[in-house]
Image (cartoon, rainbow over all chains, first blue to last red; front, side):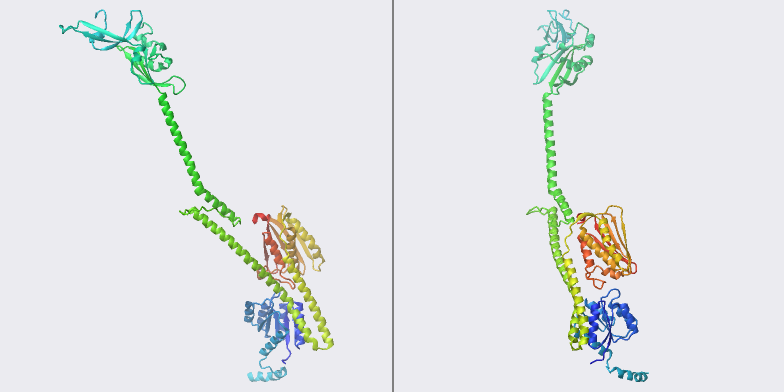
Amino acid sequence: MTAKAKILIVDDEANTLASLSRAFRLAGHEAVVCDNAARALELARTQPFDLILSDVVMPRRDGLALLEDLKNADVAAPVVMMSGQAHIEMAVKATRLGALDFLEKPLSTEKLLVTVENALKLTRPASPPRSMCALLSPRIATSSS
Amino acid sequence: MPLAYPEPATAQFTATFLKREELPDGSAALGLFAVRAVRRSDSAAEPSVRLVGGMRLDQSFLADLPVAPGMMIGLYNNTNTSQLSAFQQLLAPFDPAQLISQFGPVTNAVSYQSLIDPARKTGQTSSGIIYLTSRREDSVNATAIPLKNNEGAVLAVLTVAISRSGMIEAQQHIRAIAYGVAAGGILLAILASLWIAARVSRPIEQLARAADEVSQGNWETRVPERKRKRGRDEIDVLARGFNHMTGQLASQRERLVQSERVAAWRELARRLAHELKNPLFPLQLTVENLVRSRALSEAEFEEVFRESTQTLSMEIANLKTIIGRFSDFSKMPKPQPEMIDAKDVIERVRSLYEAAGDKNEAKICFEVELSADPMPLNVDPELLHRALSNLVLNAMDAMPEGGTLTLSAKPKGDQIEIRIADTGAGLTPEECERLFTPYYTTKQHGTGLGLAIVQSVVADHAGTIAVESRLGGGAVFVITLPKNISNSR
C-alpha cells in the first residue's frame, strides 16, 4: 500500500467535492476541497500537496487557466484534470500545460484511486518511505554539492 | 355683191370667219361663215361670183359637235347683250342667259362667269375648276376659249367643261384603297407586336415575376416552358434554366430542412447527455463510497451514510430540475402573435422582478427607459415575456452584490430595440463569444438552456440577439424585433 497522500480537489460542484473527498478519505488519503481556481492557487502556494485534481469547466477562471497559474507560480505538485465535456483538444491542451493525466467524468472510484496511485508513483520514483527519505535527504544534499 | 356685203373677209375667199348676222326677222345671231369664189371657165382673173355661207352658232350646232361623254360644250354669246360696240360689249356685265350648251340653256351659268369674264376681257384662253354645287363631285374642269372676229373682237366664248365626278370618284377610290392599305398595315403591325410580345416580352415578364416570387421566398415558382422539338431560342433556354434553378432550390431547401432537423435532434441529445452526466458523477461516487464504508465502524458508517443520502437526494432533485427544464424547452409553443406595445411587456417584467430584487439582501435597483413613440410589436406576448424574464434573471444573478438593472426600448427604423443592461462583473470577450453556444453556462446549477430559450423565442419572431460587455463594465443584451413579423418573413 502506497503512503497516504494529501490531495487538493478543485470543482465548482459542491456534491462532486463532497463525494470525491469522501472517496479519498475512505481510501486513507487526506483531501482538501476548494470550489474555485483563485482559491485553489492560493492553497497550492501555501501548502504542499501530493496531487491536485481539478475540474476543467468552471465559471471565471477554468481548470486550464489554473494549470497555467500553477506553472507560473512554480507549484511542483502534479495536476490531474477531469471534465464532463472532455474532448481531444482539451486533453491535448491540458497535457501541454503540464497536466499529468486527463480523466473523463463520470468515472469509478476504483479508476480514480488507481490514477492517484500512479501519479504518486511517478512523482516518487524511488518510493522509499517518507521517514527514510527524510533521513537520506541531508546526505544526498551533501553528496551532490 | 361685194358692195352689198361689205365684209373684208370675203376678199380672202377661203377664210372662215365669225360674224354677227342680222337676220331678216330682225333678230341677230352669231354665225360661222366661209367665202368661196366661183370662177367662170373663161376668166382666170377676177372671180365673178363669191359665195358666202355660214352656219348659225346655236344649240343645234353645239349638239352636232362630237363630244366625249360627260363633256359639255357651251357658247356664250357676247354680242346679244345689246347693240353695243365691240369695246362696249367687253365692259358689259356677264349675262347668264347668253350661255347655252348642246343641251340648251345652262342651269348654273353664273358659275362659269369666273372663266368667261377673263376670256371676254383679255381675249386669252382661261381654264379652271368650277364648282356647280357645294358637293365636290358636282364640279367641272372647264376651259373658256374666246372666239374672235377678224378684227380681234371677242364675239363669243366657247366653254368646254368636263365633269370631274369621274375623277373624283377615282380619287375617292384611290383614297379608299390607300386607307385600306394603311389600315391593313397598322393591323399587321399590331399583330406583329402582339406576336413579338407573346414570343419575347411576355416570357421575359413571366421570368421577372417569377424571379420576384423566388426572392420573396416562394421557391417552388415555375415559368411555363414552350414544348418545341426544333429550334432553341434563348427565352426557352432561360425558362428551362430558371425552372431547373427553382427545382434545385426547393430540393436543396428540403435537404437543408432535413439536415437541420437531424442536427437539432443531435444537439438536443448532446445537451441532454451532458446535463445528465454532471450529476451522475457524484451519484456514482456516493454509491461507491457507501459500499466501501461498510467495513467501517458503525459510528463512522452512520456518518458516511447520512452524508451520502443527503448528496444522493440533492443530486436526484437536481436531475429532476434538469429534466423539467428540457421538458419545458421541448414544449415551447409556436408563437401566437398579436399586436402589443413593447412598453407593456417591459412594464410587466419590471413589476414582476422589482419586488424580488428588493427582497434580496443585495439591493437591485430597476430602471426603465422607454421611448415616447408608440412601439407596436406583432409578437407572442407570453413568449417575449419568458425571454425577457430569462434575461432579467441572468442579469440579477450577475449582480450578487447588488446594482442597477436597466430595461429600455426604442424604435429603430422598422424594428424595436430592447436592451437589458446590468452593472455586474461583465463578461470577457471569450465568454461573450461562447455565450450563445449550446449548454454553455457560467452558473453552478445552470443548464445553459436559459439563453437557448431566449434565442429560440427571438429567432421565432425573426429578430436578433447580441451581447455587449467588457470585464468589470456590466453586460447589455440587445434584442431587435421587427415591428411586423410578416414583413420580414
